[in-house]
Image (cartoon, rainbow, N blue to C red; front, side, top):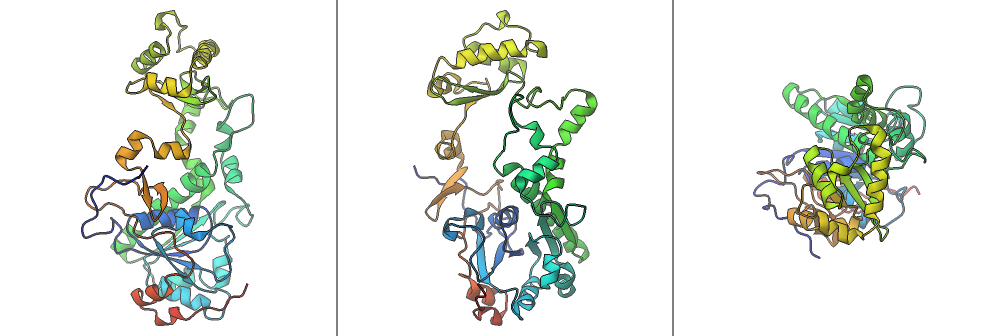
Length: 387
């Protein structure tokens, strides 16, 4: 199926961040995703790649998180490397880096050095543990950050281990989105005051911030720290997933009474004959009843039963299935660009929509163009490969 966005094309603007220059020091995970988001919204993102191959295997031409960017090669360990990055930073509005604390400073491209030539620069720092604290210098990955922040303990069945949510919760929700929010907020301040600042975006901070609702529920006594026993963590029989007869899954979110009534009716049960759903002591019995009913038909059959209703029930789709869902194709949530099916820019803007202007940046492919556009003639000189 062909995926195209139904939104009107941008008129004279590449997006709401058209004209904003972003310098990204190449890394992995949340930093590149944050820079991609800025690029999707129209910023001119220049990624500084090292001459040696990157740390991740795979064809860089298929790395969707590097779309809407241009790439230059700079050897930061060469005599002129740090000076080149500082010259780029002097022409940028935002810089994004994801090194361990102190590494950028040792390379000569830390905040003090880069902001000396550009006091209005917003210097965004993406780390797991943050720039300070006992764990700041330690290595880590998404799973450890969300474990330490308390979020991982909330996911999964009560009789099993915590469920690992890929790296969506930490790297991207707690990391990339908070870094993006931070640098854009700081950019507003810089444009008002002429003074930039450092944005310390730590995945542990962002992930902890995402749990704000549940801290309020803990204080009110409406949330238990026993995993899989609460309203929103799979403990509630009308807010969880159920296996179908063919091994598929259906997601149920019938929280409000009218939606619950529709749900149980379409499930083939009599609401009047069911135990009181508001009493958690009845949840095991309700769960057993719902489990048995869902086992009587396939995912496709249950999808047809609930389609077009307010029962708040949906099939659990794979990535490829999601890209072909009628609602998502109708909205253009997924699109095909540069030969790859991928998520379209989000969110939507009525006057300055984001666009997929460039395919994933191959390291060094745009050095000459950036040298011209950012007025750095010496940038086009090929760096030495120190691999």
